[in-house]
Structures are given as structure tokens and as C-alpha cells.
Image 1: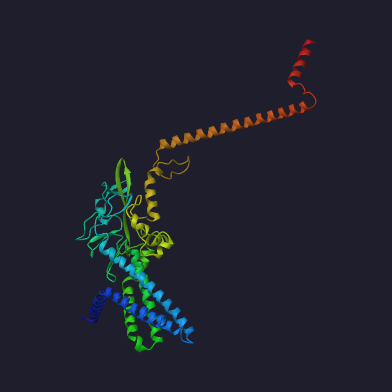
Image 2: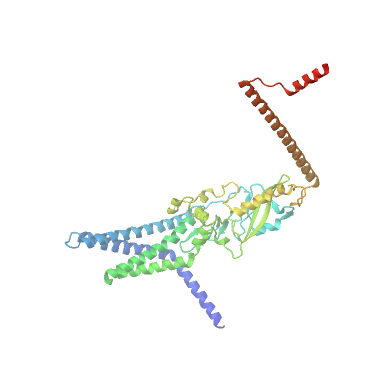
Amino acid sequence: MDCWDIFDICQAFVQRGIRRFFSFSHIWIVCFLVFSAYSNLYHFCWRELISHDETMMHSPGTGGAANLNLVVGLCLLVISALLKVIWLGAWVQTLVITRFCDRKWRPPRTSKNIMQVEPSNWKDARESDKGSWIPYEQDRRPRRCEVLGGCNLRISDRVYHCMRLGRCLPVYDHYCDFIKAAVYLRTIKAYLFVLVFLPLDALFSIAVAIYALARFPLIRFAPFGISVIAAVLVVVSGVTFFTWDKFWLLACKNCVYHENRVDPEWHLVFKYDHNGQTRLHIQTFNGKHPWDLGIWENLHQVLGRHWWQWLFFWWQPERVSRYGHYADRDLPYADWVTRYRTEFLMAPLINVAVDAPGAPLSHGRASPHRQQQQVNRREQQRSSAVSRGNDITLHSSDVRRIQRSSGSFAGHAEGSAPPPPTHTRRRRLELSGSQQ
């Protein structure tokens, strides 16, 4: 056994100790809540700053200081209480949903035009001129829970198995040991509220405790301040250890743990019709996340469609109620996924297009007979256009002749009589000559 082996053993021992310590994190959270609420809110803000200064306001020469302490005490009390109510309410919501909701949830069975599949579906794939495809089964999803000892259900998009709860959950990320709750579709928003407001409350409590220790004698407030600081350090360490990057992945990237891979590979199927038979075209995509809609749209998906819905942790976003009920998918896909499906379905129509005469073939699948028909049709259209142009020219000359004749007629109507027509005068001269 060399030095590196000893180092690895010590490192593993420390990691096990840290995880064992944080396995009681829910107890530390409760201790932090109790100690900070009693020492900061009640003992310091209420008794020392608010109630104590109300009696000092009636003493001569102390009214200004008492008013200042009253304002400071009320501000600290309101801010600290608001932070605690937000993260505590969100934490209770995640616990209740994890323990009592979705215990009998089953994935939707209705098939969609775009669906997620597992790599194991490739073993049943068949080849055709449109690519690889797998058979379509009516009202049956091609994806199945493949976890050893899992529920063995046919599952929908972004459904993963939770080993701690023993069931599949939609948009499941992980089971958080820090708050003892599952992070999935229904609890992601409340979990993010705990992730943000619990550290804020911890830092604010540290600041209040330091301010109290600096202002009052240590003998009066030291036990409360030390207990609060210790509890806050535990909370901050736990949040940093477990969830330092979760907000970016869940809220900004719309990505859960099972989808966060170094070299991501996604398998999707697209429903289409082939000679009256419904098939599922299977395709693999590398790199891009199919449900990443951009940072701004991802925030709308996770926190709510409108900005004022972001302020309430209990207000569930649209995708919670509409999961599995969208028109042709379980959840909204990125634009490049829908664009691929459109191009895939439009490929047969593009391949029968006929190029212009003399131009190189752009598709190469149109028959010569179709090309000749198109050329003849264009020649007929060109000749028809030329004849219509000649008719329009003749019609324009007739219009000008009529206009000239009408103008001359108007001039004679005003004064002198119109001159006789030229051809009538010529006939009279010819007639007189013949008589002579």
C-alpha cells in the first residue's frame, strides 16, 4: 500500500462522513429555523428593538433613537419573516407532493407524432428508402422503463424511474437528500424557490446575528448568536454541496440529471404513413437537447408563462397541467426537431418537382415523361401569352382610331359641317370621268 492508496482511503472516508452528516440535513434545517426565528425575530427584533424602544419613547431625550430602533426592528422582522415563509412554504409543498401526490400516476398511452425512444429500440429497426423505422402499435408507446426492478411500464417523453420512491415520474431529475423530496415536474419550481431563498435567509440571519452581537453585550445574546451562525453555516454548506448548479440546468437549460451527458445522444421517432401503413421513423441526434427552447422560453416553461406567476411558488407552470395533452407531443420540442419532421414529411413532394428546361437536375427523381409534359405546358403558356399581347396591341390601335374619329366629330358639331369622306369623293370623280 503506497501513499496514493492511503490518500484514496482517507478521501473516501471523508466523503462518506460528509454524506452521513448531510443525511440529517433536514434536522439542521429545522434547527436553523427554530433558533433563527427565536433569537433573531423574537429576542432581538421584537424584544430589544421594538417592544423595548416603545417604553423608551416616553422617556425624555430618547425619542429619536427609539424611533430609529423601531424602524430598524420592523424592517429586519419583515424581511426575515418573508424569507422564511417563502422557503418554508416551498419546502412543505415539495414534501407533500412527494409523499402524497402522483402515487398512482401512469404515463399517457396516446401516441404522438414525435416521441422519445431508448437505444434498445434500434434492435427492432428495419430499413427502407426513407431510413430506419420500427413498427407502430396502436395506443402503445415505443419506450419502456428498463430499470432493473423498475415498474416495467410503457413510458412517455422525459419519464424516468425514481429508485427511492419506486415509481416513474415525469421530468424526473433526482431525489434530494438535503430536503428529503423528489425533484420532478410538479416540484421543480418549489425546489428552485428553496434553492434560492434558503441561502438568502441564511446569509441575512448571519448579518442580523453579527449586528446583534456587535450592539449588545455578549452575555445577553452570545448563546443565540452562536447557535444561529452554526445552523446557517450548515445550511449554506449543504445547499452548496448538493445543488450549486441545479438552477442553471433545471431553469435555464431545461435539462434534468438523466439528460445531462458529456456527449449527449437522443433517439426520437416520427410517425408517418407509408402506403396506408403507419410507421415510426427512428433517428439519432447528437449534441443538441431536444427540449432546450432557449433561456427565456425555458424560464417560462419552468416558472410560468407570465412574469407575475414567477413570484408565487405554488403557482404551477403550464407544462404541469398540459403534460401529455399537447397536440402532437408530450412537451414542446425545440424548433430544429419540428423542422426535421417537416422536411422529412415534405421530402416525397420535393423529389417529384421538375426542373426548368436546360437547367441541371436538382433532385434527380422526376421521370423524363413528366419533364416533357412540363416543357410542353410551358410552351403552350408562352404562345398563349404572345397571342394575348397581339390582341391587346390591335385593340389599342382601334381605341386610338375611335378617339380620333370622335374628336373630329365633336369639332364639326360646334360649327361647320363635317367634310365628306375621302372614299366617297373618289368614287364621284371616277364616275364623272367614266361618263365623259
